[in-house]
Image (cartoon, rainbow, N blue to C red; front, top):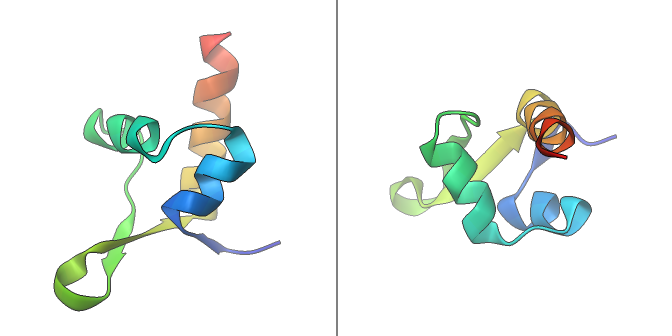
Length: 60
């Protein structure tokens, strides 16, 4: 299993839009690292993936 995920990886896995994932980030539930020129790319950890999974489970 990968230890780093892009926003599109998580969006596909959990059937969400990238905007929804950014919303959870804005709420402080996810804390991705930034990479690339000017820190434009979000890199999510396994911890972020687990937190997203638990958040979506609790939402049901």
